[in-house]
Length: 426
Image 1 (cartoon, one colour):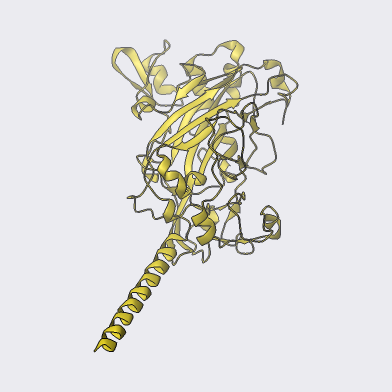
Image 2 (cartoon, one colour):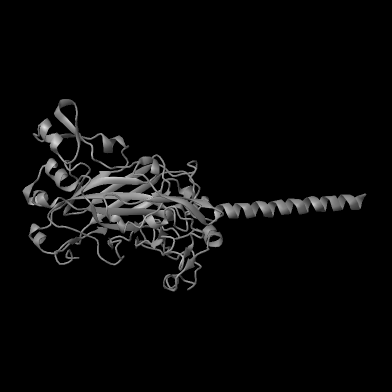
């Protein structure tokens, strides 16, 4: 009888062990793929912070009220419900404008051409922002798909430019007060991320998930109406209507984009207590989501020299493009021979080591065209820009383990080099 009890207990322990192993295996299968579940019950929402500009630049949400910073902590109504004076324009004048305006109480007008997207939740998306995906268009193409069987991506589709798509798009204007003498030539002012720039999760308990490593911030510059180009010169002190007519509207296209990828490597940067250093990848992801197939060129950037990455390694990201739409991508981690066939294109980003940039060491932004051309703006002019913030679904850290709720604080500083010599770029 005693032997039977022992055997029965042994079988129970064995069954329990089998169940535990099976449960663990299920957890690993569920948690070891990119594109964390988009069922909208485990997402990140809430944006706080500021966009600051340094000397020689001013920033505005409406091309009327200029300052050295804009506050992102304000709720959505601050972006959409600003009323602007009509600057002496009649109703007939307003109707004839390229940009639609809506008359409000007291002879004021609300600018209706904003494309600002302020989502209630941040969801995975993907873009290269390169030519035909951003440059040459009036908005960035953003994509999302459905994950099956751990690493298969199906039903890839382009996202509508609406808040429900789950990424931020915030319009603003820059006033660049550099000398207008350079406008006739090829000289431009380089644009850099300042040392006060950072992205942090509002709840520090989320930091261990790796979610902070999937964030991207893109800056898009728009062209302007060539017939009205002279009206946006700083020394002409143009009106709000002049600036909006010249720089906004459906026919104004993106001329260049730069993407900032914070937390891209885990090297220690700076000693300031306000700068928090993260590893590029949390241990869980390094151990359980290390399934890349990389080209020989990409492998040289990893410590191992193989397709396996370490906690501090900057890993490339191959983002979705229009060619990916409606495809069934069998392995979203195959970024070598199968990448081009699946429409996966390497994302050219400016990678910084952690949430902050070392003091007194601003980072030069680079164009997504090739990842090496300096990102620059025209001098002496008013410029329309748009800032996008999203979770990159193709990032190796964008897995279910990271999909926890919380808020986000982004502080971005933009600057030009201090001297005239330093400020010359292509």
